[in-house]
Length: 279
Image (cartoon, rainbow, N blue to C red; front, side):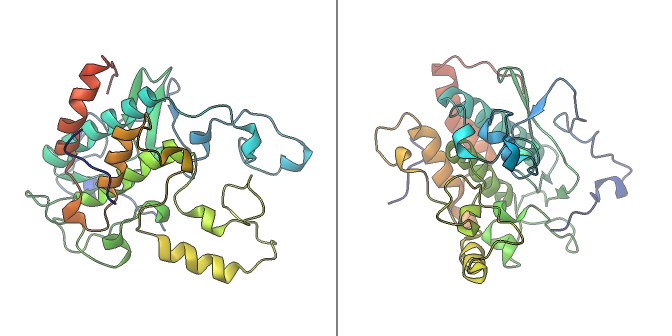
């Protein structure tokens, strides 16, 4: 991991099926349909990444899925689990970027499938994938638009810049952050600071200075969110993936590694720990 160092919406259908008669499900072995034997790492908003117990009291019954209260949290992700997901998704991105010349366009925990005890990790949902130029320096079709999901968008996507393979890399970095912080990027800026149990998704009838919160949230989009305090120490067990997270979430796309570089950097760690994971 010496290559990395920690520095001091609206969805639309994929255009892949419109060109050359290629179906998104056939363009790559990583494009797989939903399976009843796999579960999502997160469900769109990242809620499953929290590993909440499926319990609720009467005040939580209106919440979708697991309770949002932090005191229902069971446990953090182990280092090996974060490493397995990072390794599998980096390999998937390396394949689609270099072999298929495709941008996934919506990397987040909600689009990662897990089987069993992280025995298999798959990247899914290629519905907004876009074709890349052969050298990955931009989108092949000038009229294509990057969709993504707002909290995971990079600066160039938010500001109308050139979209390259590095847009996926930024979102990949935030996927790592999700597993460390157990939250959705930046949404804590929308939360009531007095309610530590909230995920950052405010209710419509909440009476607070929402305009100020919204400005903070919008200003933070496309930037590197801070890590929880427990990961700020230099001797953290998570240091290798923290370094990777920091490298991938640089605001300058030229400073982000390619997916192929990430695979090469992670490989020694995977071999040293003898980690087995079906991709």
